[in-house]
Image 1: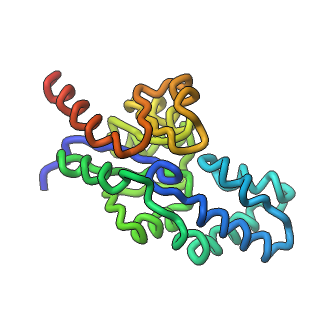
Image 2: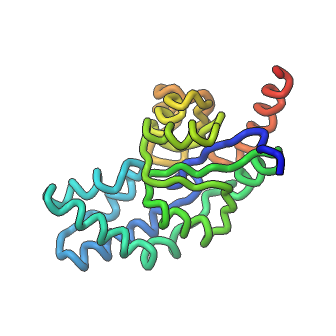
Length: 210
């Protein structure tokens, strides 16, 4: 098969999926099992960074690894079903593929759980890489030759910059449009429904430039 013309990376939580209902349920289950209160409503306002950053708010340092493993084991039962596709998510992936490109998901989430979300919501990404946050995302973006990375957090913008990719931001997560622009996003969209039109224009410019 011919090599893809280009690769576009996407973040997962609050970019492609609204995982807040599911993650809230997973944290509530974690609280029930451990007997330690986790403010699930507050936790879902901080999505983006690795799980361990949130767990450190509620558990002592020596328990983080064990509790993280427990959370990830609870996640498929509690978090996948309630989570929703973001408006325009399927169309954004399809737009990349229609133009001959690959859609790559790069997320801080545990990769097997990320794949469960994509399968459950019929989000047909070509590649999935988990366990990477902020500048670390550049490892996967560079390996797969991504020229664009789409995310909702300033950490996603930093990851795109580190990889030398065009940082496209959607104001659907914890960072508002102004914050994303200040972080250096080249493009800030209201949500993914605006992405296919932007991508067509962007690719036309790339092709014209040779």
